[in-house]
Length: 421
Image: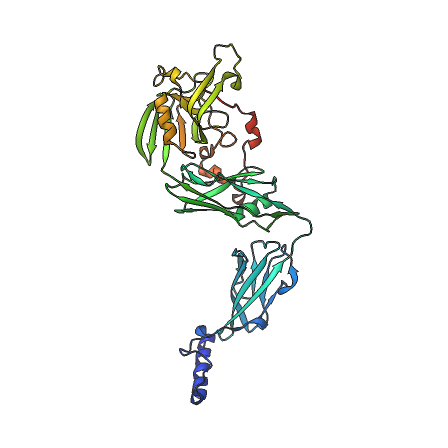
């Protein structure tokens, strides 16, 4: 009968115990199981392609490779981490003959590697080694700034990442995207989208859960992004969400309905953009709140002295686009609120309703406009229109999903209209 290596080990241990029993010595543990034995030193059983110790530096451009030397054993597991605890991903051959890293090594980092092996009889071996990677003589660091500022936001708030230098190459974008991590509790499906060469947005498939904790962090430090470009240190970010607050404005019905956690809490008569100044349809995200804003027709191309000219003090202004679309108090149009659209693009309401809305919403809450004759909200460049892309199209903007982004750059924001009423 043929015995497996493990069976042979158990038999040999049993015989050795009998032979040495009088002396009280055993070569195996009390239960005779080889996996419970103390691992032997596997130094002579494995080989590294990186210089071990501190005498020389390893090249971070080359993957780490560990091989089983000889035919009397195999590699069973490899764990490699840097000084900050980041793990190095890798692949182990089915026969245990070779392990190699599949994620890039960081420059100027110290790594600890634990290799577990097994000999031909199934006995466990182990070897721990350390090595340090070199730092290129000439390199440029790529900085990343997460946004928005730490705090509590509505369920529509995207996470942003702004790069210190433009990155166009797809392979380089893939390295960056793999290293920028966004985690949430509870866990939701999400993805990055390249807005332009220096900007990424991250959002989940649906709105964030209520009262979620969202953390953004980076594994990019020391990682080679492109020729002479290496990842720099990145400050992590922590956000939380509050209740779900969604305001839906029906421009045709001249009414805004506000929902908190799916339950209607208010219905407000409003006026939206008149012909030629129609309010944008689609999902917008609250960008900020301004108690007082001076709005002038000249900022939207209306000549002074024309019938459409205006210069008004506006209170309780909740901003939803960079170009100046607000939800705000409009006491001059109360007679039209609930029955006609007479504004220059903003959503107007009575002062008391605007104050209530101003006090109720926070940055990141959702303001959605339906049934307007206006254009659709841009996905990027004029606020957070991210939710106007369905999930399939959102994913095409991810370098990891083999897509390409398409949208105006933040530089185009300066060309947009600053304010409307």
